[in-house]
Amino acid sequence: MLEPLEPLIHALARLPGIGRRTAERIALRLARDRSRSMARELTAALQGLETNIICCSRCGAITTTAADPCALCTDPRRVTDLLCVVEDPSDIETIERSGAFRGRYHALMGKLSPMRGEGSRHLGVENLRRRIEEEGFTEVILALNTDVESDATAAFLREILAPLDVKITRLATGLPAGSGIAYSDPVTLSAALRGRRPM
Amino acid sequence: MIEKDQAIVLRTAPYSNTSRFVLWLTREHGRIATLVKGALRPKSAFIGQFDLFYTCDLLYYTRNHGGVHVARECALLKPRTAFRTQWRACLFASYLADLVSRVLPDGAPAPAVFDWLDDVLDELATGEAAAETTLHAELTFFDRLGWRPVFDRCAICGGPANQTERRAFFAAARGGRVCAMCAPDVRDAQLAPADALIILAGWQGARTPREAKAIRCSPRQARDIAQLLGAFMRHHLDLSPESRSIAFIG
Image (tube, rainbow over all chains, first blue to last red):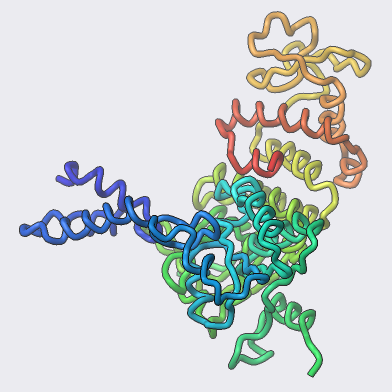
């Protein structure tokens, strides 16, 4: 019965967070809509994405083809000697929302993860190195996640960027706000102790 | 039903905003998948208790439908924090976890493979000779699966390997080393570096892990050994994982 919907189900199921069953439900919902308004809206949005939306050629943030490099890369009011390296463009959005950083960004588009088919060649390290040299950053902040693979990626970047004349820093890790020592795990607690600071 | 087992994290993936899907290798129940509900919530009891290559004590509710169980409790036994700073070792650990997750079927007990992976991860976490450790681990993994390659004699006639022989042959389909007499009759026999075959035979013959560790190889020999074991894996396990080339080549 679902055979005519198979190409759509297959395409939907490739999206993150959508399994086969969810893809079937979405496809059926679209097929049941007699007015076809939902399908038209979705088609227009996807076509708009295909023609107008890209990742910034400089930092990797989501932008439009008309604004490439993106506003974050061209805004003269931003600090130009600080570079924040993130794993994914969505992290740029998260950090921007915090309002705590006003420098430039660079999205790696992944992390070292052989099991997901991502190695050092997939991280575009040459591009990052070129940017650091050409744009004259004085500090590179590695704002990566704190899982094993992200920490290993940070160690890899530190090694690759060490020959460059730039300060390399990492986001602090430690006890979450509002939590207690009794509830923290050994890895977090040891990171918090290593990262202690004078007061 | 609730099960309790020791488990190594092979892979994690997001399930929802705060929940994770985790693939484990358990000692008594083999490869299993669990949902860890609310794993990323700030006050979750799972925070910091599991990540890749950790060995944990896992308590989970079994679910017969769909094959995905639900984690109830997880207590960290070995975090192997060295993988966070030794990125090369982390790449090899990632490849080995990928290999195990591809080869083992769901729910089939494999205590020998669990012990093997636990030991290999401990060894890799020391950060010493990660490539050699991984190659040796591949060899012992084939053993555990019942696919022991032959390096100390000819896989066809059984004649002893001549240690002084300069030209040696290897045939993945025949299970290992092939002598110069038998090689012309074997279609897939390829010239192989004799020193690489000698190292492999030495690793196999070692009585203890320490004895095997004492047999070192140069980077060139490691590349040759990786090629031979890769050919063996392709033929017998029908596997040529991308994670392997990323770990060995970059």
